[in-house]
Length: 570
Image 1 (cartoon, rainbow, N blue to C red):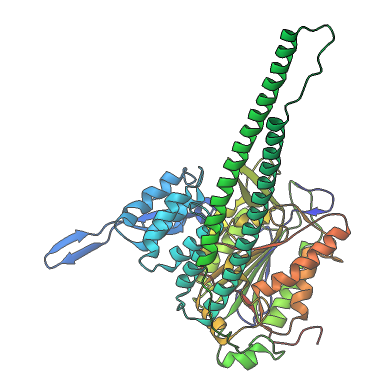
Image 2: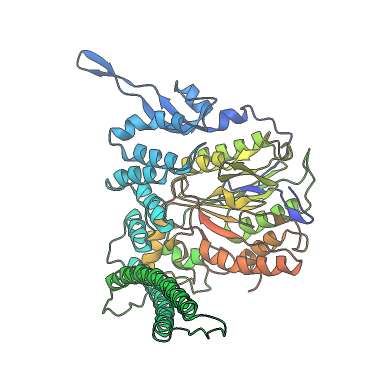
């Protein structure tokens, strides 16, 4: 779908080697050998290994792994080819190993229940399996538990419990300054929420009590002063007595109606009082510390080149970027700005931040999936990967849920979903990558559907740039799978940025003028208001969002842009 100047294109960028020049621009005519189905990540059961013990041979149990369909076949594995969207298919692969106590398999089972896979998500079941793995110290399960508690899915929402699970996923001690600071922030937020809730319930109770008092006064007036009926001149005494009796009966009926209203109001007051008492108990349970705040060193406030000054104590790893830009569509309206976006972003990443950049222009579905799959052979455990996508995007209704898609240049227009690339395929590939830190930046319609995770509590820590040594230590030791979408789950603009999209223009300016360590939250906090302001100036509200890509190996880490040269503003 495209409305007026709304952008639905896609730009992808992949970094391949540090300080390497921007490598070949791969065009649509490239003919990869594998099909799209070969490049899909599947739940694969590998055959058992033949082992020898003394004079005897035996075969081990089959092993479940996530790998591409092609790799599964090469290794003699088994997978379901036509029914991968059915959650029962995936459960059949992982459940035996999960029931045997393997924490990774238990986490996979939890993720299958949480995603739903063709049915409604079962958060209660996901919670049970995450808990089993989390109790064994499995970090991914601990993080996933935190997100369920933060959002109140399958369990009552509790941000402090969520924060504690995030802490455990980090491997962070409870007395850590970073955790204590975040915990106090969450406690203060919770305290204010409880105070507001208590005040609201107090006002409601007072209002109802005043209504009860007024109704009681009305009853007293009815009972103490029955309304007399002036006798008619031609009425007999008996008729006058009957009229007076009718008036008293009416007054008694009125009084009974008022008493019923009072009973209903008093029942409401009792319910609100009970709710207020529960909130007051929760409020009283929030810990209050008599402990002074510690002052920590600021690693992010210096304008020195971080890789020169802080690199002595901080290792950020190698930086790669895959940039995919699609403008020339075969069956849909073309887009104007993606190629210019790609050229500028690629140059900044390479020249200012030392990225190795690979550019993919006007790619079909096979080309896109090949480029993402090939990253497995490019990246090591401590590397950083940025994937930048700008192009047509769409969505489909899946029951009560919405599924998002990236549309390559050979995609059919909606509602036909031929050659569309589902978000599920992208996130499963991200979960296989060795890279420690991955950031997906998607400038397309409905790009926010790539993740339904919350903006979790630790995500904004350090958003001000005050990076203590402890903060950096924990962030850099944990993997991250993060995304910034240009317009959430809505359409986005293809113009508005002087030759670039309104989103790409802001992204370019921020990175080009930056001279210090820039985290994902910092980048987003600067980018969002610019996009909002510029889009509203043309009568369209476009609001970016920032999320974790949870079911892809995220462990509460972050992504850092570390400049190697001075920016344009210096």
